[in-house]
Image (cartoon, protein in one colour):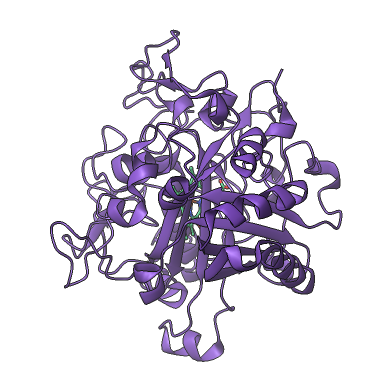
Length: 468
Ligand code: N7H
């Protein structure tokens, strides 16, 4: 059986939250820090403490803590075996496709859109404080900082907040987020069609924490983890700036023109075909022509596999964001055998991000140009980054114009990065009526302003670190 008291709670089942602070810190005194961590331990919200979906709106404050590669070194934690975690995201950002700044060199990559603080600050760890209001979250964050006292220096604080009113739960482009999340076998009873994986895909050392090669029906090779790492996970954090007025302008200028569609309907359909879902969350694979609220039901909303009635892209483009990042079951031709199926259940991530920044202002809407910083504080959890977690999905799927087969010329129109090398990204298939389509996107709608990878240790390892 799985010891839920040993797993931090934003990893699984993820924190219910309206407001969240990410407190990025450096460790100034490791031995004092260890003692303070021992005090903080009782405040950490474990998987056993997080309320289940039916009463997720209860008022509570939740905490989680993690360490970057430099923090792991400062505390002598040892390595759980993840080279991308050890290298850190600054070094890995080039491979994620971030555009290089002019001062970037072959040995020192600098992301063009990375903010000054994310370029320069030394980040050893992160404390997550999540709550139901800004006031309680500020209080919770201050309390955590107070517990660690002078043993840490707060380097960066990122503040996330759900969007207001009926936009709650929607990211800044307007699409409902958090609709599809993998059900961990043995822990979660899946809804119809919900993607499932072994818990070890997300949590280290559990069943399914395996290395390739993956052969259909055969288990992979179990990864060798040190005992202390069992129950841990890796958090990928990315501050992703979203250019909302520019995204809206692009849709306005590129409505799908089909007989019987008004301009607004053509705009909505183009956006839905770029994402793979309507703004409501309804998948276009189930409802390709219009946003149909009948599908807004947990037993329908994820019950699709992209191959009915046939596996082409008439219903959902191969390039759609959700099809690029989670191809579900994949056939490339009618009647052809399933492709990728040994890999897909290993390439799932738990997503736990939250929007940041203000609503689009009337002035920005009028100018069709962003002047305020807003976007998504993207968070994902996986047992290993490169194969087959966040960076694998970003690098080899979203940024790869030839994925999924037989795709041959499409970035993920939402998050696909082209390193600034290709100025105009293209996506095909977003207009089902036009087979030779190459939709040109002359600018990126999302750019990374910073980020880091963190080990989220199991509670037993927190005890070991604090006593060490
Ligand atoms: Fe994505 N968006 O608004 O367009 N994402 N995403 N994402 N995303 C999803 O199914 C979005 C990002 C995944 O199981 C939805 O919960 C935005 C990164 C995966 O069917 C929407 C940003 C990566 C899924 C968005 C962003 C992913 C997914 C549909 C950044 C990984 C599940 C709602 C600002 C590298 C797919 C839902 C599945 C869903 C959007 C980032 C991956 C609306 C705005 C960086 C695996």
